[in-house]
Image 1: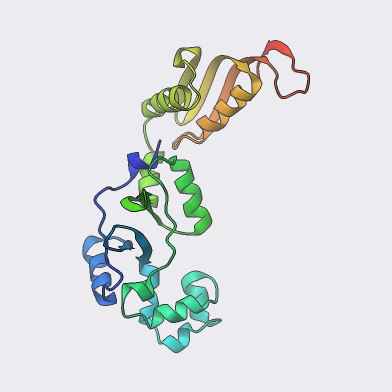
Image 2 (image 1 turned 90 degrees about the vertical axis):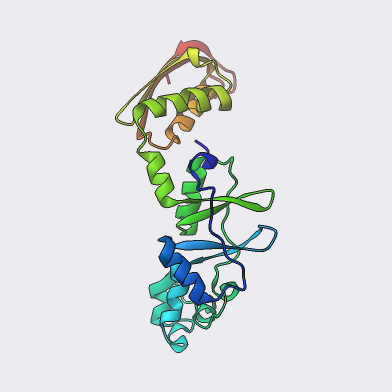
Length: 229
């Protein structure tokens, strides 16, 4: 599953000169927790989130580097929070540069970025311009898809489009998120790659591979024998 399949395409944006008061109103009225800041060409300059605006609720002296508020808001003492506390416009409050992702990237990559960068949303960018946004809730919805949809994605996306394997060579069954694979491929490395890719499909909890291989290309000399991994 690609980011383009789960992202929201109709995205609210603001300009860098937008007053913080207006930004807060947009977040509240639209029930969103963050909004991309874009220039007139549609390039993403940053993101203003509820956390960025939270700095405005406190005395700037309490937001100085190393203060208790620094730990409460972003977990670390830094000068950025002090600047945000005095922000009047989006350009001063936004987190920049924004962590972005391309629409063709797999959903698993979006999840990795969100976890590692500690962000709740990713602007989706193509050719330098904003084309959508993907949030954590979008990824959660992808994770709870029915088993029949998981089977379809494994066959169409993993086997056919990614590995160029005839889906007829591998039998795929999914029950309660557990994917079971049967069949045979030529190389052991192909079997191992297939298992890893299936495990990355959103909604797959476990992979049980019974796929056999003919050549053990993981050894220096190689070994021909139809065996299971």
